[in-house]
Length: 176
Image (cartoon, rainbow, N blue to C red; front, top):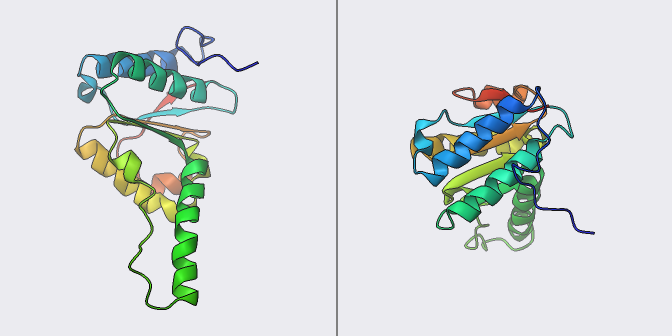
């Protein structure tokens, strides 16, 4: 039986995660009314596995897609991003090793879809490969400079490695 679509109405609200729900609902309402740029950005949800971070991220994506179909939503996990980047990098490395002089076909940018999105959701940032931390931090800076809403989720208040590359405005909101 397929899982039901995560929505705000299906989220199990507890005293420990109410602030996270309200923050994500505020972001959704801000996007619906073209006022998301007035909210603190980026929004960072942290908590243990099973605490509802992914549910809230998917509920945000679903709500925004329903209320604002004109917006492009970039939604991925750090693991998916790492896999995509590795997949794109392997042919380029093989080409350089086995076919010298064939570097004209540079691999596509794995961050391009996120960069071109109106709303970015990056889940499980603790799984981001170390070599992607700086490019993702640069992407976040670019998105925030262009006033694009960003939601990031992770297990910890801030992943120490990620925080060293990006410490500007991640404001934790509890999701337990």
